[in-house]
Amino acid sequence: MKLSLPVRLLYISAVALVLADLDWAAKAWALDQLRPDQLVLNTDRPWHAVLTPPVLAVILVACARTRLLALGAGVIIGGALGNMGEFAVFGRVTDFIPLGLPYRGSTWSPADFILLTGLVLLWIGAAQYARARALQTGDPLHGRRRRPRRQGHALPGDS
Image (cartoon, rainbow, N blue to C red):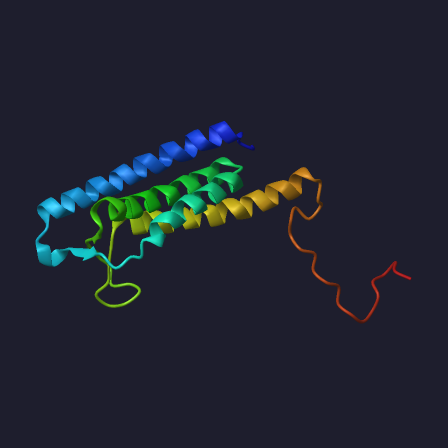
């Protein structure tokens, strides 16, 4: 089911604000409860990175036509608000989850996990949207590709 623009904006905004708030609450807890050697305060982000998420948010809102796509867009925007909002206000991003990926010793913030979850939701939503559009247009293959016929002998009935 397609969502109208006002419904999309409300849905995405609600999800984004809740997740950004949860991210900031988790980071406030970490700053209060964890030892300084358990925290990584990243200050090496360029300032133009703060301006990029609003541009991407506009694109995500425009493309989020279904509930799953809107949920994925809201999750991604929430993660971006968590990290970039903290960077814009405090000049740093707090990482405290020792994951060890993509390299040994790396730490993550809750917003990083939120962003990854949003990307997965967008990927699944985009795959479902393409298939649903094919069903609506009456495509007999439902959006799947037709396998090319083998070259060689003709099938019975083909002349």
